[in-house]
Image (cartoon, rainbow, N blue to C red; front, side):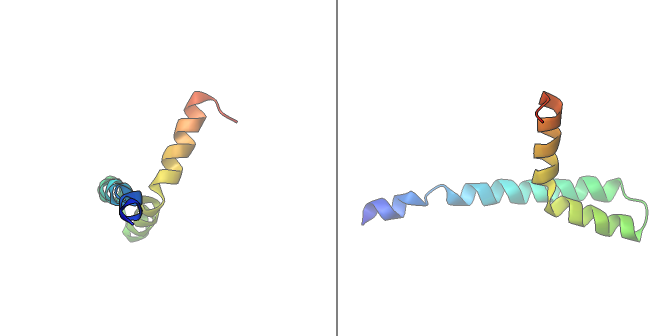
Amino acid sequence: MSSNRNANAGAGAGGAVYGLGFIGAVVYYWQTSDGFWDHIVGILQAIVWPAFFVYDVLASIGAS
């Protein structure tokens, strides 16, 4: 029974990292936006920032 409680012990850490990354991405995209729709697009980009990050990392190492 106690092994089931320990199975999800670190599960909250991923959500915290994503949350901090989301806040940072919103601030970054908000500062680089000019108009209303740019701000909306910036918020949408902040939601999917991990996909942009992984794509850029793979592109920089030359993965196809």
